[in-house]
Image 1 (cartoon, helix red, strand yellow):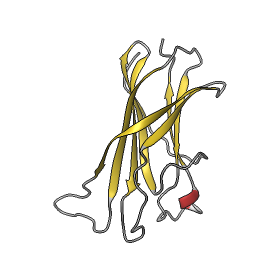
Image 2 (spheres, rainbow, N blue to C red):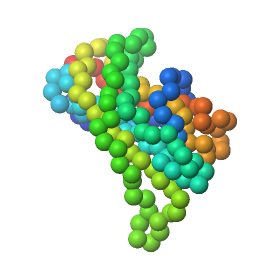
Image 3 (cartoon, rainbow, N blue to C red):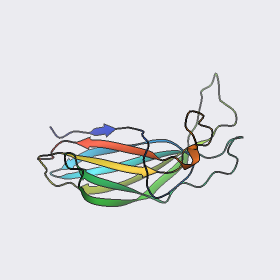
Image 4 (cartoon, one colour):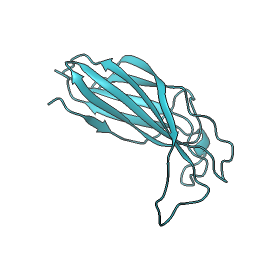
Length: 154
């Protein structure tokens, strides 16, 4: 039952500030061997637009916590350094939107996850969302949480 687990959940949270103008992201966990996984966090951020002409840079690291799914007890936290950051190409030959810039930051490391009959979840939190969001009060001071559940690695 060991396989690639990809989870994406964007929710509100509270944590230490790492970056601004986050527009999305995900956590990807890929099985390598017994209790060993490649952990990748992707972060998408606004890299400049008419609404946000001077955005903050891509964070240089993210923190991912490993928590017991039943008790919510934290087992460990990994600090994962930025592996690459690239500006994405948006649109296609028929239409390329003007004034939109999105950067993808990729953070990767290999981790060991112990057996746990309760299962686990991963959580990473970043601040702040893109200021153009109009369905959230104060998006610039509202966090984003990436979440992934993992069955018992055994």
